[in-house]
Amino acid sequence: MLIQFKALSFNNTLRIFYISSLKTGVLKMKRMITMAAWIYQESWNTDAQWFDKNCHNGGEHSSYGIGAFNGGANFNMFLGTGNARPTLSQPHGLDTDTWYHVVGTYDGATMKVYVDGEVAAEQDQKIDFQGTNDQDLRIGCSKDRPNYTFENGSIDEAAIWRRALSEDEINEIMNEGFLAVSPLDKAATTWGNVKRTTGIR
Image (cartoon, rainbow, N blue to C red; front, side, top):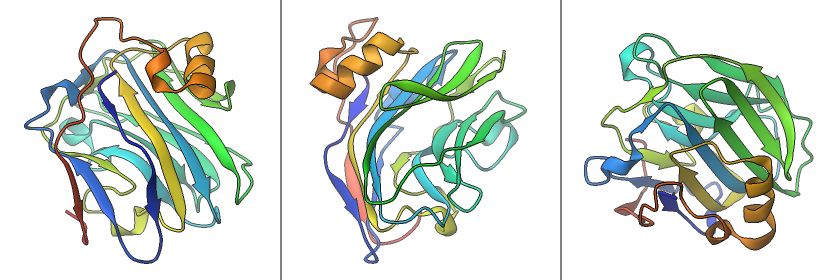
């Protein structure tokens, strides 16, 4: 596991959390990835970024991210390749005022989103995933996209792995917490340089 957060709450007072990527090289991903968090949303009527490593600027600048888009109605998972940004975008049908365990994975062949331990969306996508830009990893917002800020909800137990967790492992972290699953390469857990600001960077 590479990074983990606990209990990030967002309301109309803008709170932005990010990790400095330059000091945390492990946030640069290739080939595979898992992004996981508990998500609580009071409404699903606006776009909301959960994870973002500058995934919206296109081409070689894109890295990776996941959130609710299309007016909050779809799961969107973004992966950069160096010259493109393949995206999984499918309706989610999630309720408001409910905690959901949401996980996005890529294993080199298929993009998947799990909700509460079960596959909720998937898309075959054989790409050369290169999530290696130098931008910070943001939780609850997106670089240069203030309209994608997560508001009126909470993100808890956010974590990232540099491999695609299996469905069994996803159920383990959902039921037992993210420390239930060890990283494939035995890398130490990295909290990074967590910062809170009151604006979009």
